[in-house]
Image (cartoon, chains in turn green, orange):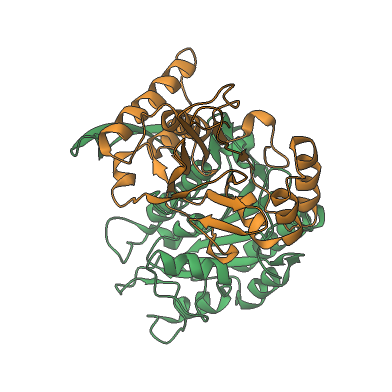
Length: 277
Length: 241
């Protein structure tokens, strides 16, 4: 139980993203700058972007991970579109090759002579904002348990799957604590499944990243999501510490009105230079 | 030798020179480098660095030299990809740059050696039955998956510091240059160390031993490379490698 299994093409791991697409996601985001459904779309696009880049090499994208995206709102179903529609899990290379569209953006980058230069970059978009229906979080977690369970039966020695739930926290089909616990109870020979939660709330409050206690969290939904989240394994905690996060042994995979993309950096698929930003 | 499960062309370590010099020389230069897995075209960058070190184009870490080498790296990629535009993810990865370690050794005919190191590739100066000098690490606990490495992006090198070491060699001494997984294995496993130090291990014996060690999980599954350099004084003062 050490979270030390090699992540490779021969022994891949998996990510399952659960994205809340309920009607309440059309409410304003507490952190400002738009609605919650836009923030969910930004979060999932950014996570998949970073996961793809992590696995990209000169010859293509290496399938270190298989990835699923489960939307929950009016229905609980795979949110993948195009030729991936309806599939629960696909290799990361298939997602990399199938964004819905690619936008062109500009960013400032080092010109190699001490200055900055504007550079055009291509930014893929897989998911657009959707908000309709209730928030069947329990059903989504049960479906996640089924998908992850199937994966583990086929990959018993993999680095434990990571499930990331992005939501405004207000489940409408019951208390999600028990279904969350059942997801976390699944395990490979290398450790238990990690369930992390991203809470995008309308509440105007400070942001929280990997808190160790629920005491300062702003509302009951945040506290519930905190309690649904896995404790950070030691190596993730240590990587987070090196990046300047204030974490403790009680820190959980939970963020409030913040992004969780750093978790992808914390996973090792080989040498990652400390001076790579 | 590439990481188990990878194709030979996915080997991202590098070494130079490719063969021992055939005659005595006043100065002999050699190097190993380890391109970082999480960056792309890092094997190419590692190869450019070792060749530059051996060709005396890279004597110290200065901005201008690294800029020139980085330009060479980019030109080579442009050449390789000119008929096939890169997909969005390969282009984005390229913006992050390539990263590599470097361990370079210079042996002089007057018995002086010096080494330049960035990252976690290691040098061992061995005087049989007497001493082993290890540089820059001397304990297995010093290795981790996040060393600071030489980047093709100038801003990645701002805080980078090269480490240097020097000493004297004598007849009968030899030097090992090892990339990180092998250096860690060398430090932590006495039987492997003995076989290398006693000179028992050649290329033929090396690969089965590493495969077995990877299977037993006592050697990390990574590309592995070693150079063994045995200098000697010839008829004229010089280094024979």
